Image (cartoon, rainbow, N blue to C red; front, side, top):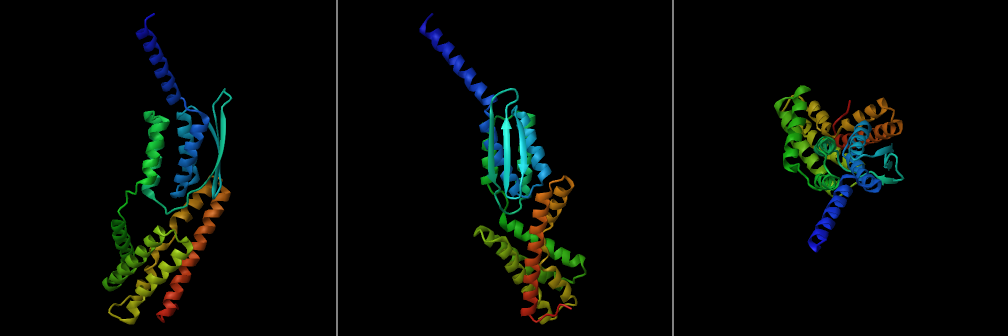
Amino acid sequence: MTNTTINAAASCRATAFTATQRDNPSSKEVCLFLADYAVSLLGSGATCIRLEKNILRMASAFGKKVELTIMPRHIHMTVWQPNADDQFTSISSVKSGPISFSLNTTLSRLSWRVADEGLSLDETRKKLLEATTTDKDNPWLTLLLASLANASFCGIFGGDPTAMSIVFIATAAGFNLKQLLAKLHADTRLAFFLCAFVSSVIGSSDFLFPSGSTPAVAVGTSVLYLVPGIPFLNSFSDLLYRHYICAFSRFTDAMILTGCLSLGLCLGMKLMNVGMF
């Protein structure tokens, strides 16, 4: 046998080995990836049932079984290879961050790509890193749309054009402060309190300079952008699917944020000498 033949055979064996390793990753590799995926998805505002389905879908695509325990701040996961002595367990902390519908959608689509297109673990890991490190949302566009949406709510609740203009300015100021505090990693409860205070002070200006006929609507809707609707809805979803601990935790967080919002609103109205009743 010539050296060329030997080298060719060795190259074929190396290629086959690499392909096998790529197509059949170990339980440890899959578990560590799924743990990173899970904490990113849960931190972006996903429900527990969505997380379960996405994790099970990808684990099955990689030829693994998975047992998952979701807690409010941690995820306990065990991945194993059926009919083989290959098992790995990890406990990961949930990455707390702002709710992101775009990241939520991107990560959910990634799970379907793994199942439908047969992405390798390395490719999937790169897609996850790209999704979690690339901010695709334009903060200024988000600020503008949030301000327009809240001003529209003011109009829906009977606000006149003056009130809608004041609510637009109040929302823009408060939401911009919220974005700044998020970049500084400030406590969410403090951020809700400060943003509600700033927005309510600006929203109360319609009382001091009565150029419109609906000042009460202006101050009442100036803080609607802070209402934690997603945590409330997620807690109800978790309750339906028997994730009782996560449901109670999310409901409690939402209630605390609502309390911070209310406190900031009341103090802002008090400062502006605006009666609440």
